[in-house]
Image (tube, rainbow, N blue to C red; front, top):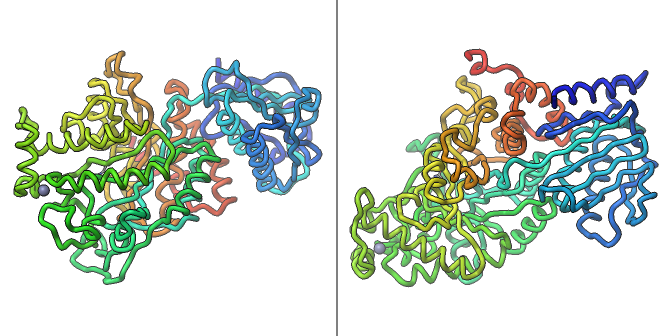
Length: 552
Ligand code: ACM
Ligand code: ZN
């Protein structure tokens, strides 16, 4: 039925087009594909620079949305459309109008109605309208023109998942504010709403904390970086940087204007050498420690036997909460070796004081991490926040109100959802975008390993078929992770994520039964035209049939 609608609207467009060149026609078959595209009748709306972009008078968010749409149209077609506050429905004739429609069900859904008389983009919220704007943006032909014909149609979509994310590691390599904003721009184009920002790790602490200035000043810098995959050769070049609080506020605002919430990650109790180098008293041995120039998992982690460590973490989180207004704070929890705790008299004393004993497969030290996580969870909860942690937390007896990120495969996600945790699916296969995108790696930029092709990403299903019915709603969505051990600059980030991000966007938005890889591949080149317009690097080979697909 839906396919027939798609065909119908194309035919309508072609008939109405007459002598109009294909390049002047809008095409709503974008990525992600809108859930519904229904042709209305045999007509077109003629978009020219005489059209206005209307928005409801007095609505600041919609005013900003209107300005964004006008900006996109100008970038892609050269036509400048003015924006106008309006309350009069008659003003809609001949124009594009942005509307809030409380009858729409999904808070992020949108509908676009195109008739010969005008274009309406409606959402239940301004966020929904923004997603409609992105679809209109992607449906435009690219290139200077003085008109675009928009085939009459009713276009509508609402996202399948509430959590549609991408992650960016700014610790292993540090990227300037402009690159983070560029990354946010890419998320916006793809209809995503969460940026998971990995800000601290063994290789560098990247967020200014006023109460502990050495975190950034000392913990933000390493004396050199290993070459290749942890070779014994170190480049010996001092490397680092951090974001000031002012810069972070600016980035958070920039993201919010694009309906993207930033989830900061302060990884604890492991991956903490940046902090330990700055404040060695936070470790079990007391140091000295260095900000690490190698990749991997370090044995030195926070000492949980000292009250001071807990106070430190709470102080840091106080400032983090001031900077990031979103509900979620990511507290890491992955890859925390317990060798130091096993040998540390203070950690062992803490275990005794708490009456912790090992339970089945869970060691006393694993449960110590669970205790610590719950302390932090309670602290954040007192401030109205919730935690997300990596799936190792499932082995630490944490409370089911902790949201779990399933990264060591999809199985921990299924386990977490069954135990009552909310879950975000981000399994290494296929959602680690720092992995190769082909098995033929000889001419690829150095990557972590693995092989996550475009097709594997597209085919990923976040909700396992055998997940019990009462656990399915716990799968909040999916996210791709971009760890940057081997990614040093913006074009390399882009190369790793484009076009895989397009495949991820489609699975985040489109109901699974409407997904079709060949159809996606046919629509992708038009999205890539937008990448090209903005000068974004992408893996062109993924647009043609690659080795992995031929094998199938
Ligand atoms: C992870 O990749 N260590 C979460
Ligand atoms: Zn200790």
